[in-house]
Amino acid sequence: MNILLLNTSDTTGGAAQACNRLYRALQHAGADVSFFVNEKTGNSTDIHSFNETFFKKKIADARFAAERILLYPKLQNKKDLFFFSPANTGLDISNHPAVKKADVLHLHWFNQGFLSLDSLQKLASWKKKIVWTLHDMWGFTGGCHYARGCENFKENCGNCPYLSEKTKQDLSAEVWKKKAALYDKSIFTFVTCSKWLADIAAQSSLLQGFNIHAIPNPINVEVFTPINKRVARGQLGLNPDKYYILFASQNLADERKGFRYLREAVELLHEKNPELKNNVELLVFGKSKVDLQSLLPLKVNTLGSLSSQEKIVAAYNAANLFVLPSLEDNLPNTVMEALSCGVPVVSFNTGGIPEMVDDGINGFLAEQKSSAQLADAMLRIIENRTPYESLAENARKKVLENFSFEKVARQYLEVYK
Image (cartoon, rainbow, N blue to C red):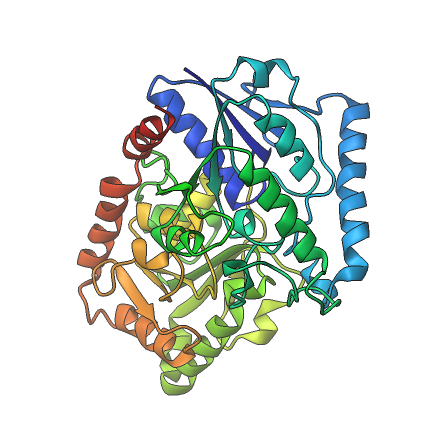
């Protein structure tokens, strides 16, 4: 059985990293699998792009630009340019040799000019088995990647909060109708990375009658593994004797990742425990255009965007705890990576995060948007109210028992069969 994984990128973004890891997990399990992308940014020679020539890359860039240019004037808030995808431009890969060879087409995240809904229609016409892993809500909405509390997708989309045109026949309604027509004539098997997303997907009018499986993303536990904190800090040029709180996101300005609440929680910590400033520091990695030090009362060590896997692993291991106050999230890689390195996690009780963080066992969960509870959870770990060694050991144990290559690959192979 030949399996073809399809994703917009091989390394850029959480879905790309998850798909890349699944590719390695399936290889490790002995599966006949290949991985093709729209934009190749990594160095792996066995991952292939549909746009390997200079000319094809320029056409791909043009597709992406055209989709965004057409979308921009329709948005209510121009900052939401990458939070809604109309999928009206894309590449026809239906006659590519890799597609013809495959017994199973496994779709992941394919927006931003890679595959359009028309592209999907052509792929579906082959009548091959199509598995689609949903890394966000886009597969069952009229275009948004996260609904932000809107429940229109339960019936049909229209009056979309992301769009400036407030009518039942807006762009989201058009996209919803195209998906409905596609799904009505095609047989997909849907997979979500969390039970949380599976429950929401099952409420969608678009996915009624489809099989929906909840299978987590895998992680290489041999790479993301605990190492001595002093050694890790030495690799990053950090003070070996400080206490580090880590926050990480691909884009630190993404409101969905909740940096605002981390800032408020740190301010509360400092206000009630000013002595912490002598020993506790923030450690941050990800893209940011803002001077974070000016926003926080504790010292901030900014590592920037990290592409080196060795440095990413060092960053987790340098930290005493990891904080991710996401407002919406499926199964964030950063939480899994921290746990795999034996680092306790503090987060909001939202999305798929409670499927990784067991409150009081390998970290703590706070009520969503409660900066006070977030601060208290961090302080419980800092003050060692729950033995730190137990939290760290349970963090690693959670990943080994649930998210290893072997366990996740086995579940996907059952779905393919």
